[in-house]
Image (cartoon, rainbow, N blue to C red):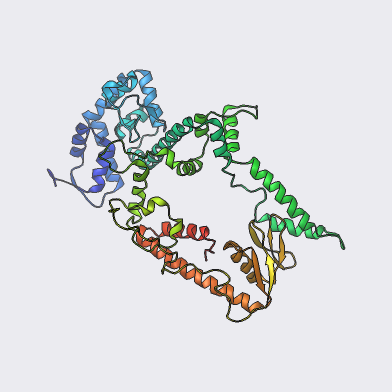
Amino acid sequence: MHNGRLWGEAMLYFALDWCGTDLALAEQLVAHFYGNWTEHIYDEAVAECLRNWLTESDAVRGYRERFAALPDTCKEQLRLLCGGGKLVSHRPEVHLETCEKIRRLFLDGFLCANLLPGYCQLRNLVARFVVEEHMGLQNDPIDLLRRAANARVNLLLQDVEFSLRGMLKTVFRQMPADDLKKLLKNIKSQQPLVHEDFHPKLMDWASQQTPPGQPDLRASLGQFLAQESAKFRAANNLWSEVCKVFRESHGLDNINSEPTPEQAVVCLTFNQLKDLVQTLSDKLFLDEPRTKRFGEPPSKRWPIYLTQDLGAATKAEDTLFPEVQPDWLKEVPGKDKAGPEKTPAIPGLDGAPLKDFPNDFLPNGAIDAAPLTLPNDTLSIAQDRDGHFFVASDSGFHQVVRNEVEGKFLLYAHHRGHRDLNLPKAMFPVFSTVASYEKYCRELRQKLVRNLEARSRNHQLAELMARQTFEAHGLPAI
């Protein structure tokens, strides 16, 4: 409560958005919002007071007058910022700024330093309001406030992207061109030659085209697809995608045109950028701190901000699937490293190792089984037009199974790394083994989700991490 005005947190952020660091603006804004603004805040009431302030305030009128006095080159810079562009600052201090336009805009109160070093941003919403007013755009103050709230998140993501691209450019400049090509070529495209849903249909079609008494065409088709898939994966990688984007963006017809390391960074999508930053983290972050004030070097300090929210102090706990945890998660900030090394936790939430499929789930007693060899590539279960189930792969493997459960038996064993398998001839052991294994995985996943949610306090994040952990261990996400 101050001079008859009672403001809640929402109004304080409202004032921060519109005034920024301009205290003269804030003082006159307060004068137009008299009374209790802690609850029952309606758009109409806020809009009326806001319009009155923008119309009557001497400080806002000063922004309009200073904008009108700006040269056209300075006005163009402000329009660029309103359109979502970036304005580069050449010096950390405004009095050292070499660009006269930026220095003028700083001193006239239109710009301030961006969160990302080396860039500028509009000082407040009043500056944006005045610029858009001059541009003749629809200028409803409440609409501008809403757009600015969404734009704030976009600008933060844009700052992160600019920062990551700048870091990656520095690493790429230091790498020999051949090493850079090799790195990007080794990252294969995620797009398959034949979609996994279409593969069973293609195999079914091949079986229909086989003349009576002739060899089954499915094996030949499978071998052909495997060869073409290998060629496709060899020719389609991150480097080929970057070159394609580079040629299209520059309008080049020469298929041999290749980007420079700096140009290659610009051609990356945000997801590709993220993956490369994680891959090259040892080169991106310093191993030694620049000053003793920080203590830990950047290479170990940057993951701390992630682990703090996820419950970083887990080094002394028996974690679920610890071998898939990154090394930095095992380093707890501030923990005394003296003393004996802790024995790594055994996989499994209850401290027991993961059970093996199918060996740990088969019924007791002797089971009559037939040997079967599985391929190394990905398997999938499908059903032909007659309703018969089969398990197939891109390499031409084709195994008819009695039902979907028997197909799951093969897939689950394949996912756990088994290639030489003994398939029970009776169906009861198959049903019993698959049912017990699925029950085991379901309970294990529920425990894992609860464990991760307790650390992260985010159910969706816990579900995502649990699914990724199960995939890494070849467990079905049931």
